[in-house]
Each structure stands twice: as structure tokens, then as C-alpha cells.
Length: 213
Image (cartoon, rainbow, N blue to C red; front, side):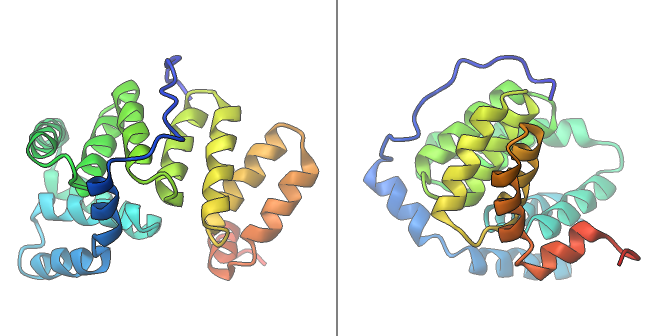
């Protein structure tokens, strides 16, 4: 929650170009995950493939799997995180210059900027992602987190509510909304979202933690 104030880019209602929207809809994320996983069976230290796989998992809401891949990237980099981040940012920008409808590159860029501490730039990239996929609950979730991290909880809630409307089964969005409304003292709304979140038994067990009854 240390990001400074950002002039909001209010593009939530803008329609993405038709070609970009179609590319987002047609991307076979399951096939991409399988492709990267297959490469890693032969080349487990391929950090670029691992990072790409983490981004696919992030897009698809497999946040625990994505985090594990990012941790693996960190281990294989052996302290060389900075040049890797710079390379990812440069290559992602080059990809987008050649192929503006590429859907994976914005994720690679946004997360790389954010993880390097360039939170202002990272937030702008998440804004652009939401323009490309205005009803994708996970893109809205990550953008909302950037605002919560910067102290703008109302903006975060608006984005998370939009995401939970687009995908009512997104239990993590319900959970963070429960936390956000609790923080604001709106306990009825918090309880409603917590109830929706805990219908997902996997989330319940994850939040409860091992050893707790």
C-alpha cells in the first residue's frame, strides 16, 4: 500500500478493438499451459518458460500454481532477478509493438513491472489489460489489488464488485471483498461475500490453514 496517487485512466466502459477482443476470446489457455509444462519437463531451469506458465496460471485464476512457478523462477535465477525483469519488460514491449493483439504479453509486462517495484507503470498496464478484457474477473481482480495496495480501497472494491458480477463463482474475489467491506465497517456486505467465498471448500481449507479446526 505504498504506491503514490495515480491519475485514473477511466477506460472501464471503453470497448476494445474487435480484433483484440476476438484474440482474447480465442486464446486456448489450457493448451498454452500444456505446451509450457511439456517444455519444462525437458528444461526445468528455463525461467522464461516458467514465467510464461505463471502468467497463464495468473490469467486463469490458478493463483497458487502461478505463485509456485514464480517462486521456482526466483530459485533458478539465483539472485539474477534484476536483469531477468528488465529483459522480460523489454521483450514484452517489443512483442506488443509487433502484435498489439497479443494477450499474454500484457500480463508478462504488467507483472514484471509490478514485481520490480515499478507500481505506477504496472498499474497502467493492468488498466490496459482490463480494456482488452473488460469482463475478465481475474484481470479486474489484479487491477483492483493495485488500487488497494495504493490505498484507494473504494476503487478496488468497485473493480472487485465488477469482477464478481462477471464471474459470481470467483471465490477469491468474494473473499477480498469480504475483507474490504470489513475494513470499511460494512459488515452485512462483508458477511454476504464471505458466505459466497466459503462455498468453495478449497478456499475455505486454504484460508483456514493446516492444523486448524
